[in-house]
Image 1 (cartoon, helix red, strand yellow):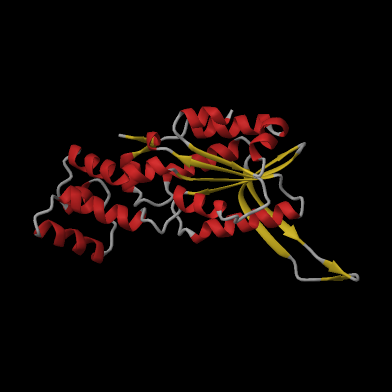
Image 2: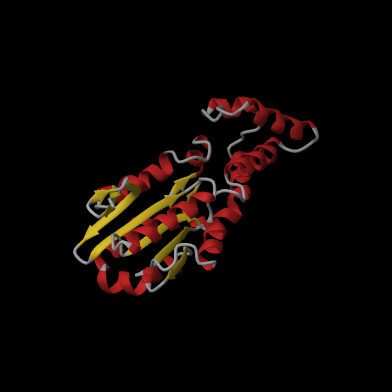
Length: 243
């Protein structure tokens, strides 16, 4: 089933036999996930109007997963030594799918600082060691999506005639800091078209290399972060963006 995502341009990486486990033990749950991701789209006006953060676009995906049983869950771990309870530890996961063969845990990292990947992978590692989960799944921005963001934002602004701060405010895209506005104004004063200046600042601030995207995640798992937990990593492709 993961071939559907690969053929559609999604980045897909399975580690520690995750694909075999999902295919043979969780085929129904895997089909749910693949179907939800295959139908996911982000409109450019939503992406820019939301300031690049987790607004309508990723909330729709979260709601879609929650509606089919992938719901937020807090794992409580309590240690007892010689009859004495030690302080408990909790691990909250945004999307957990309970099934007869076991439990799947999923995190969406649309636009966080990249150390959140370490947190997610280490949580999965601990929960797997306790037999609390069978597979950990992370969904993030894929390589192709990361690569086209600057061009797509610039093109969308130009095609929609957004050539000034007033134009942005007219569409409700004016909620930015004074420093961001000054940076764009400075580039425009030096001769750069407004669409280019805005897009460069917007993408650098919201989707820079230090945020959660495919290459940052791929690097961590190839260094062994999260081992030996079976992991399924999925990167959303450029095709999820619609104009």
